[in-house]
Image 1 (tube, rainbow, N blue to C red):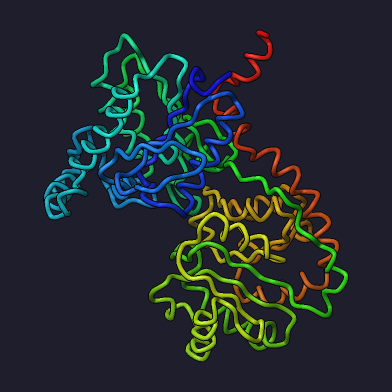
Image 2 (image 1 turned 60 degrees about the horizontal axis):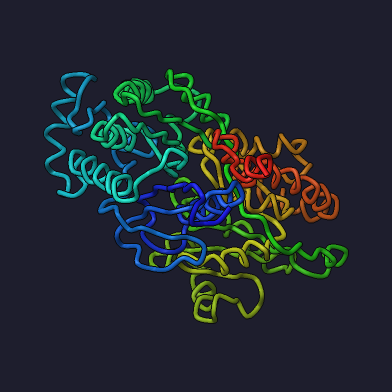
Length: 453
């Protein structure tokens, strides 16, 4: 099957405004899976995206991004349901009036009604200009309840004699902890009212974790749980040095730029606790990503000069206690950073990650890297799948436990690494991008072509 005659998968993500970051990585992974299934992938991105991507044909169409700012989920700021024009509906009279008064004070391009229209216009531009065929597929990579309003608005403008099928991937939790919030209930009502507006068009919802699918089910929304895709590594990490670990430091990696829900506020305490007992002793070294600006607030005062020296020295501490990467990393640098890990450390807020997937964790698991993660969330669920604490790593209830767990990891490292290597193969098979698309119900055209031949 040649590219010119292959059906297309259109990947839609307004969040992609430049190279680097997990939005583009997800699109690239789905594109690779699409090729395996016999599709020609195309990517609709933000207008600021003016760079070439070696594996993707990109169409910069969207004038706005980050639609989830108006979501009713935990990552949004909305407290009321809205219609497809952005007008507050339902909820209490006080909430409706409050949002009606507040919306005009938002910047013009991020007012709800303007964002809905702009996203809808971008989607329609793709559909109308690219002449969608029945065998083509559309996947909205990073969806939410507010973006679904924009999608429904666009679909209602299209002629119903050529109905479209759209797959929407949901990532972000509806509520924190165990209690269903009022906003989550409104989320469910809004999504179901939105889906009822579609006419002959079909929208399939997919959740990137089982807990997220359960959260959605609790508010009356059905979504298929799918495995979040992860990129296979071409080379196998050399572990011959494991037997010499008593003479060399284990490299602890905190990957990804720290945000509030990813432990930004915990870094200072953890660094202070580990510096004298773990890093200066030579038992461990730490590799971290920090923002290019204002990284100082994440670092204890007495260590800021050490961090500054490392940053000025190409990220390397002359005494091999630290590696500091600043800003977003390109794909090659990011994967090299992960390849250097002997231990993956996660300071994530477990309440925010009760139902939310961590792509970074999956990327370390497929490398066979033992990890330390918070209890009571999706991350510790992955340890449970591998056999629980002591299988491929350990979980903690308080960051005060991390120094002791690192000593335990060092003592148990050969066995932890062996088990993590075995579990890596299972994780990679499940989270391969082609399997993600198959789980979504997207037909395998390569298999169909082979059967027909």
